[in-house]
Image 1 (tube, rainbow, N blue to C red):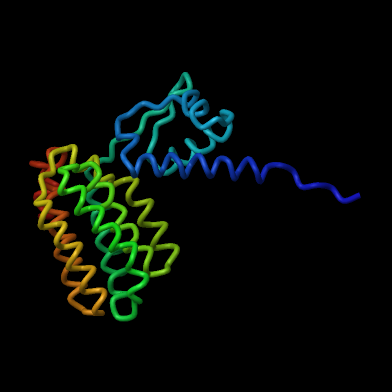
Image 2 (cartoon, rainbow, N blue to C red):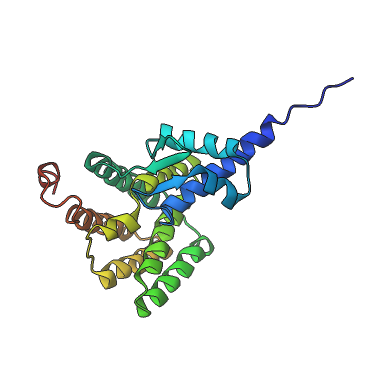
Length: 230
């Protein structure tokens, strides 16, 4: 008699779902660096047992994102200055590569999600709803990287955002020119629609501005390591 496969696959699948939920919550700003999370509360909230919660948190610990503590608690680590600077450098590599890969051949239909996000960003700015604007801004850049149809680029960019949460960056004192950064998104979209190499110049300028904004934040301002990079 043929033996049925054990249920370990289902357990792993559930742990993966919890892991993705936690990652999305960090990227989306629901959980902030420095927060203490209760594994029991997470299990109750997600209606799962403690095992997939522990497995997911163990993965996050390996990723360097949490510190597991006694009494079913864990701390969401605040990224170090070195981590933030490394993440900025990787972000530039991934986004410039993505634009370079698609600008000559991208079909206009595939740009529709970016159009929808720019409209949502415009509405958020008009309502002066900056948290919502930041959320759509992050989605715009994630979508941009997904357009090159490279699963490793997409996965790397999502992982990058775990260490470079823009909501956190704004919270620590970044004061960007929102109207200008928003215009960059529109200009980039138009350049992609026209298959223009100007798209590369726009994304490079946008990322350079973003880097300067991040380095001017309260968390990094005045640090000798960052001053040498400006």
